[in-house]
Picture 1 (cartoon, protein in one colour):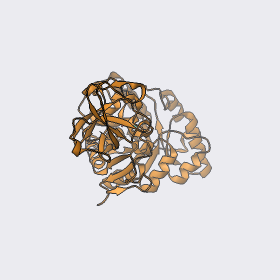
Picture 2 (spheres, rainbow, N blue to C red):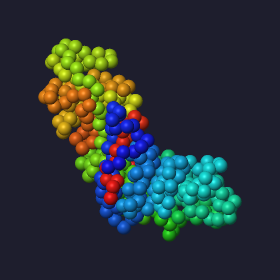
Picture 3 (cartoon, protein in one colour):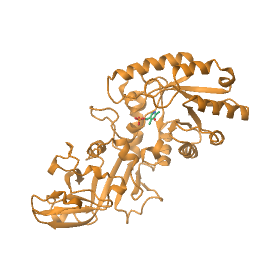
Picture 4 (cartoon, helix red, strand yellow):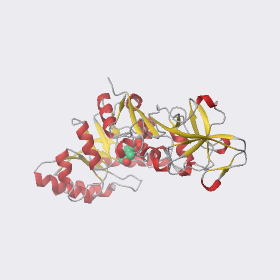
Length: 384
Ligand SMILES: *Cc1c(COP(=O)(O)O)cnc(C)c1O
């Protein structure tokens, strides 16, 4: 068990994050199995979905992962420092003036436009070396990537293409989280056509959802992200992944309040019984969205409110979430079993991350990547 020096002191923090690197490794192994003969990479953008890029990369590298994907080059530099023998693809942003930084750090750019292709070809010519890159083909998402016709034109342009060492051709699915969506079939067909123009290159299309589908999307290299961190990748099926992140808030104070009184900002909730209310030192400034309060989604079935858990028992949230504080109704927990300093689970093994995300009107990805900087962070599974 390791506490990260840069995180809040565990004695002082009002909230703590426990990140189970053993569960992360198991999740990667499951995805690797689903990927069949394809290589299983890992997407570690946005500080490894909030989990900490350095410990996550170190653990995945030890588990056998050799290829990482990040969003921006600075994340890539951190990956290369942690796993110098691994490949690192940068998914977005090869700007003018950036190429030399990529070369110095040994980063592989994913080229998403003819503009970026031009920049990389010029950089290669400058150093007189063909340097590895991936070509991203847009097959129907209309986000990043060149079109089929732009790819054809590139192949006919000797001056540019002869400078590129295109190791990989990739695309990205818009609707893989929705099993059986016709868009995914359509994109896969388009991708296949594009790969025929660049035969013999490594092909990569699958995010977590498409990797878990197991129906011909794995190609040569898969790129799972959210599933590694225990989040739901596919809608409306039981999540096969292990929870990796546990978020807990610490009780500052428990107060008694009488039936008929209101709780918190806006007096949005009126007590239906004499209650004991526990205030935790976690709020929306910590990435626990204010919209979770009073959002009226199904998970908030107990007293119509968001749930936390204390020693495995679900607790209803109460009133609005403030910047630094939020409240739970602890009336049903015996007084001698809970008090200031007790920890309440906000998500983790008892309360699913994605249920909390749904209550906030968002997805697990956003909740994880938005977790704040005031937590004490503890990593499990780091000691051999
Ligand atoms: C973020 C991202 C992934 C990973 O997606 P998940 O849904 O988190 O598995 C894969 N490929 C690209 C291009 C991405 O931007």
